[in-house]
Length: 408
Image 1 (cartoon, rainbow, N blue to C red):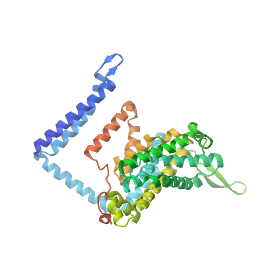
Image 2: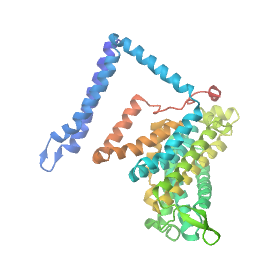
Image 3: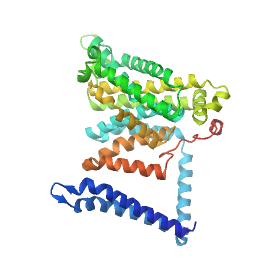
Image 4: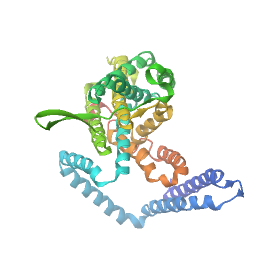
């Protein structure tokens, strides 16, 4: 295929895409009780079309023979920057990143901290689902059920028995892992679409149980007045005593979920590069071959399900403590779909990719909140474009589709 024909196909694809976008917009914006109007559709279509034409134009110009010198200069600059970055030790970048995250609440307002807390919660959820979907290759559509198990575990223990958040945290993780193992045991003998349907069904079963068990969960009304985390501090007031202080400020909750998210990243990374992670990758790439090589596929798949549920339970316990109330409608299928979209968008099996996916799907919609009625449309269009131009995700995993020893 010649360069000219490539450019022609690129411009033709742009024209078809813009035409499809206009056809999609017009029924939403152009049909009003007063009749048909094209101006509203054009106001939205115009900036999108100009941006798309500009991007395609730059791509076309960059492939012209006259731009060869500019391409070589850009490649040289990119290589020089990569070399300079690689000379800086990794711990320096990690230290700078942690310092930036620690200072973040001091640099932004309450709204920025609130968005960051949401992003970090979904980072924990995305990394937990990544163990199941990204590392082990199991399609799970009921993952949010374990989020609910963790949330209700803390809500019930804290409101009815007065158990501390820090004691409830491991209990929520263990109960979520047990729920994952109980659900996984009868379902993991299935593969592919059948497994996805069954996990979706079990996820809904847990939500319906929560919704109807009035004596334990208060049904659709949920549980309110859940206490936030607290800690003990030494007080010197006429002697030495301990005082229990609750973390009521959003800034303080940010640091709690930051610790959870960093711990989740470290745990998932260690799992990924352990012998267990190699077994999960073998199952993901070819389950039959892995079984023939001696991998106990059922046991490792069950372990992946339980480990993924553990991180969901931790995130759920924090969610209940932060919101101070829980209700069944917080754990619907759309939440499972959102977390799965983060994993797919970021890159299956990729930790930085999933962090970026959580940022893209939680923080960016907040940036474009003023276009609220178009957010889902833009979201769907962006996902469709991503699947076309970069189906492996924003930051694909380095070991995806390769032998584990390649990265050792």
